[in-house]
Length: 260
Ligand code: MLT
Image 1: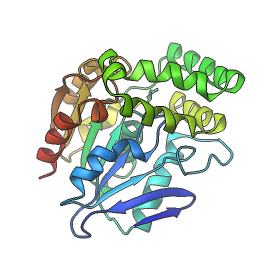
Image 2: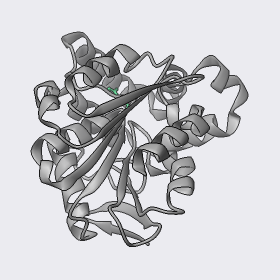
Image 3: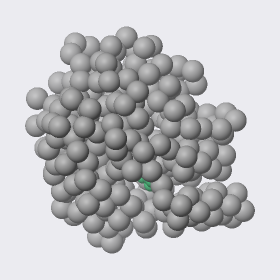
Image 4: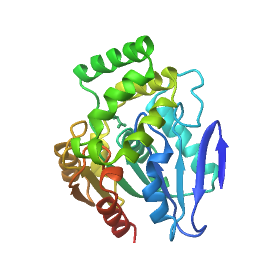
């Protein structure tokens, strides 16, 4: 079933019974990045994907976003789909949203999957870089930004040998507006530190991270592993930041084993 709630475009698929898994995409992509996971998981599991506000088919609106608003959107979606509890699985920005949702709404969570993400906030240096990116996206347009961004999130090998992954990611960036991209950058720059909440997250957690991830490196995942009471972690070979697409076989194996 496809639909929208408060302008948020979603897909709800797989068997109706059981606790759903909600897959939350990274910046500046959309829910199509989860295609290899939806195909695999939806055979036995209810799977919900959606486009974060300002991405994919969820309109940019006024472009004034915060991670708090993204969490409100997620909870409104869960309410709309009558999902009292869910396993939240977020990659990068999706992980920032999942972590803050876990902190604000622990009663809605039955498991947490943190992929290529971190609990710490932006450093001042990172905030200054985001401001420069906003300026560049507005001045030079989305295509130039997309071509540079894609190189930062994939391994050299993925860039050379997986043209379908590269073009699908590029297309999803190109479909987003400068306003939506800038709004998400501001939201990430202003996000809170969810590290103090980690010891209180009492549901089972799985941490997955690409071995060559430079944006949210394995060291950030190891720090979360130490702080979470019930977590396991796997480093994904042959992957940088988009580990679910760069090595879907390894990623899916670990995710399925966790969800059983
Ligand atoms: C993402 O992949 O969601 C972003 O690159 C995360 C970030 O910029 O912090």
